[in-house]
Amino acid sequence: MWGGRFSAGPSAIMAEINASIGFDKRLYREDIEGSKAHATMLAQQSIITDADLKAIISGLDQIKGEIERGEMHYDNSLEDIHMHIEARLRELIGDAGARLHTARSRNDQVATDFRLWCRRAIDQLDGLYDGLLKSIVDQAEVYADWVMPGFTHLQTAQPVTLGHHLMAYFEMFKRDRSRLSDCRKRLNENPLGAAALAGTGFTIDRHMTANLLGFDNPMANSLDAVSARDFAIELLSCLSISAVHLSRLADEIVLWASAAFGFLTLSDSFSTGSSIMPQKRNPDAAELIRAKVGRIMGAQNGLMVVMKGLPLAYSKDMQEDKEPVFKAVDDFELCLSAMTGMMNDLKPNKTAMAEAARHAFSTATDLADWLVRELNLPFRDAHHVTGAIVKEAETQGLELKDLPLEAMQAVEPRITKDIYNVLSVDASVNSRISFGGTAPANVLDAVKRAKEQLA
Ligand code: ARG
Image (tube, rainbow, N blue to C red):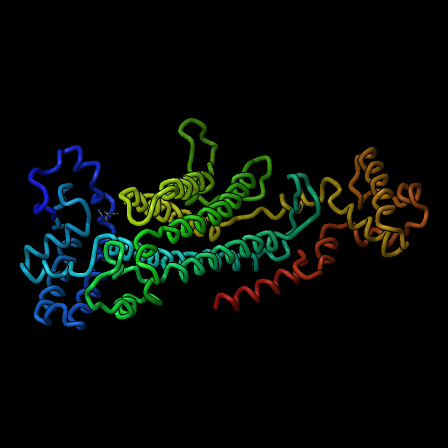
């Protein structure tokens, strides 16, 4: 491509370190789409002839078919997907193919292709989020009134409903999805026509190529257009945050599926066995989802380090932008799909969860609240009184609801038998009707709102 200036070819090692074809061949669709838009605009502006345009379009279509049929021959000496496609086009249509690169550089070309690729990835991820959110909502509806312990510090805190717990993840993934759609808005600008870095003297129409490629507008500054990669970093940030959420949910699945918790059984389709211990059902998918966050955050960190300190405009360092994004998107798509599969297959154990919810004086706050409501005690005093009652129950080896009234009255004489109305876990969750609280009625409201949002 630059034989005019060079008399010797690169050494094999140079070709190897320089080549990106091994990974950027994934950009072939975007490259062809971008080239078609560029050629259409060049013809419209009378920079190339209509005959050239026709030859370019049919040549590019043919190359697309060849690539998809696995007929393209890849070679490090042609560096990247852009040069492979252009070289093949020249082979197929001669001079017309050689005119395609007028008023364009690989710098704006790759920036365009990569933005288009990320945009397509976001659209695909959006569909996967939709599936995950729907399955969470469906399960939350089924388990709206199933009681389980709610934890803080992983110590039993207050009873909650499984539906409420699941809907917490609905909220997280809903935000993650909207973060991605924000990212899409910001990245949807057209770098094409920035050329190498300074723009071009040809009378191109960047609005037209923006329009043809579905971009909202041409990027305003040619230097920025070829050297910005914050769109890719932002995409990785969105994935990192969401991978953290997936990892927390995965971690709970791992914990809950353990014999110690016994809150759920994993379906055969999302468990693996052990080669030595015949009884084992291992939650490997959840563990791997929990682990993937490391690689996804690594990708984000890696790309930020590549970009920091690069002078404007393009530097070859930036060729290293694609692999982390491709890998992170692949990993993340797999995680979303696996989590959706596990969510659909969820088999919670009602008895084990309800049993655990009753333990550890989980309704102590309800007792203290009763003292505030019925005896008008200041909350701090009620807290103190309740602490003494819990201590007594602990000594007697009883749950609060089984502690005799006299034992409670020994701590606070004004307590009446009405207290027992608030000490069961069902009473506890049913009472938590403040907006966003865990009451089954609230969960069903939240499910209804969620279904409307998803419809
Ligand atoms: N393969 C290159 C990349 O991914 C294309 C841009 C090359 N530009 C250049 N000036 N050498 O970044």
